[in-house]
Amino acid sequence: MTSEAPVALVTGGTGQVGSVVVRYFAERGARLFVPYRTAAHWEALRASLGSLGDAVTGEPFDLVVAEHAERAVHAAFQRWGRLDWVLCLAGGYRPGRIAETDRSLWEELLALNLWPTANLLRAVVPRLLERGAGRVVTVGARAVFEPGAGSVAYAAVKQAVMTLTLAVAREVRGTGVTVNCIAPATIDTPANREAMPQADHSKWVPREQVAALLWYLCSPEAAAINGAIIPIVGGQ
Image (cartoon, rainbow, N blue to C red):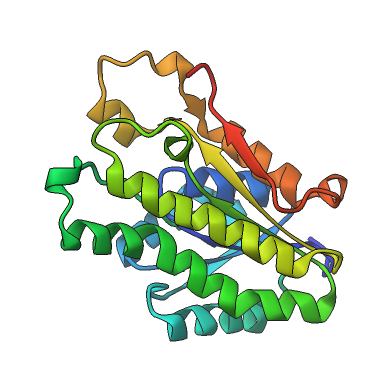
């Protein structure tokens, strides 16, 4: 792997989607830095990568804390000497109808989805602008466009992530940096299969297709795409 190999910072990289993305990018020659919260999940990711693990490093950070996001970006630069791509994959779903949506649920979903993304963008966008190059991709949700019953807070918080993405994309327009967002429907993960065993899993979005879309958005061919919200919904 040459010194020119691109470097990606991937939040949520130890998760069921993120781990597939990390492998996909490493197989294609990228080097990666993964901020993680749980040591056991990090060790499981490393073990799953085999020889590809040489291209993946990580350190523990809680990106809900702005200072941790700053330190994570600094650590990525310290390890690899550059940063080209930022994939904000950290997130999570919690159900709740409006009558069940108390402050604690709002705060949990904000901590899962919005604060890690907002804090990381605040830390990393100035660095990318200094170089005049870089790719940032965030994760919204189809639930923003088609919210189901019982997804009130989740849909609202993901809307905040998507609006944040559009606003930052406007800030970086014409600089060589792009900021885009994918909006997946249900992704085919072990956790989703366990939660919805009777669903038609063939209609769900394969994790590898999420990884492929992210790879494309980081590629030179996607240089003209900025401020896009891209649905990825499979057969749903």
